Image (cartoon, rainbow, N blue to C red):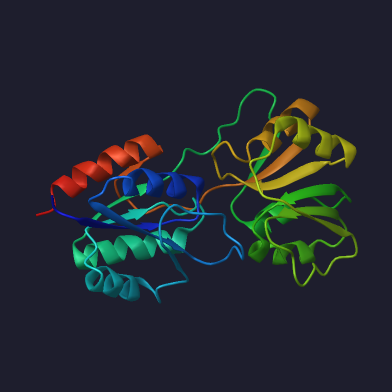
Length: 252
């Protein structure tokens, strides 16, 4: 039986689960690549590669050097640059390629959503009046908050915010999802949150804050996803496993 090599560009729950399913097959060697933004990533079932590739050219070189048979883009829905690099590298090398992207959250009855095109746009849409804002953005994307120092911020992140924000009123919660609905409801109510500032990341791990906001009548300023590359995309790990096996079966 022919051995196959798979490179997964990850950083999501789906990438970790997909790596576990594929590596369970004896003839599939899986490497999972992480950008390295999280200082202490949780355990993964396969070897990790940490750090960037130096652009699409560097990724293409890695694919050729390691004789990768299948490239899977399972990065975060907001990792638009990495997705572009993956598509370009796949085109250059001719490697089998597809993407995994979980569905975005959809507004439902009771949601008080204001959509924004970027973090800066979202901060602007918080308004001129002082508000208590629960922030769940990546720690590297918080700079625009400094442009609205009149708000009171509670920022939750996986890693510490260092240096802290240049605003007079900010508090930090260090935690990793998934988060339970009861806990999110208690947090929003106990902190008297006026508005939640978040990305439309999709998935179940952090959706509880959206449900809690709906139940409490709290407004949500939600950042839309960036445009993704026009490549074949599946939404679930199950479909990704099935498509991966199909693609690998076609590799001579």
